[in-house]
Amino acid sequence: MQNLAILLSGFSLFYVLVFILTHFFDEFYDDQKISRLFGILLMLCLALLQLFHLNYFFNYSETVISPLYLSVLYIIAPSFYFYARPVLKAEDNFKLIHLLHFAPLVLIILVNQTHAFTLAFIIGSGYLLWLLKTIYALRTHKKSFTHELLLLIMVFIVAIGVSVIALTMPFSENIFYSLYASAIGFALIVVALVVSYKPKINQEVEKIAKQTYAVSTLTAVSVDEKIAELEKLMLKEKLYQQSNLDLLTMATELDLSSHQLSELVNSKLNRSFSRYLREQRVDASKILLIEQPSASVLSIGLEVGFSSQSNFYEAFKEITQTTPGKFRKDHLKL
Image 1 (tube, rainbow, N blue to C red):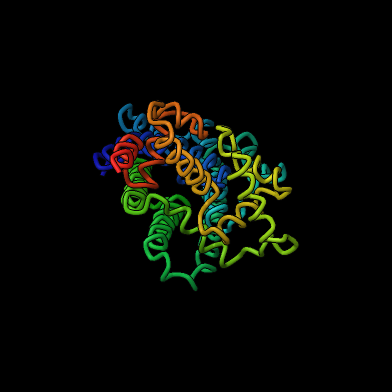
Image 2: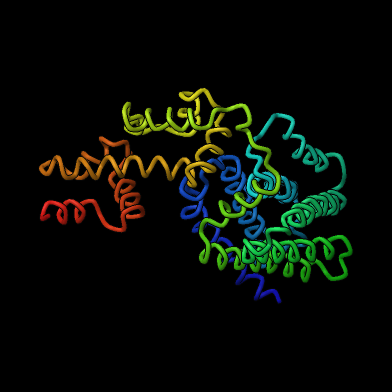
């Protein structure tokens, strides 16, 4: 059991690093900045727990419990909540009052470490109930996200199993930490499999959540007029050329909130704002590639608003299924 726990703990450390470096991009988290921030925090906390577990296994410490271990343990539940809430509830905001979710951290200095450890899992169980309730609310769309629902249910089962074991502690500490470390590793394996199959899983679930919960933010907005304004800013004033253009900046230009603009683009143009912006830049670059045959690909990419050549190539190939150089070569032949 301990050998398996060591193996899965090592995998966890490796996968967390890979996941953070490859998954938390604008492309996957359009308009989900809060979710991305707490997602990174969550993954780092899980990696830290596994480091503690490895230290426990290799150094044969009497216990893994320490103030730092408990602090990480108390941060995990609210981090998961703020990571999942924008996806499952379509509510991507964070206010000062939300810091109260981290208030239980004071228990670390108010009660002894053993009780603080037990309370961490009791509090975590409350967040698990929220997760179960939220998943249940999305049940009417289960056919639209079978794989996503399976992932959430499996993670829920693993988490509730660990909580039950922690609260009853029917085993020795060594067996418990072996099970706990293995559970974290197993949960990350499930995440790896599902994310490799559906890298934009968070966006797909968010769309379903919006159908379930969201009340339109465009009730008092003249949608057609705002779409026309948006197209004018893009096509005539060429705002896409600003490399730092983002959802909030564009929303300010249109006298909308970022949530209103996000809903406007999603509901009327059937794409995220980030995707829409990339398409505008790629469309403009296609014209320049042909009109300016002597200009470098890099200069054209920068001119239309991309911040680097790699970003330009990636977006161009994603949208046109070819590279800028090949696109230019093929069209100049014609």
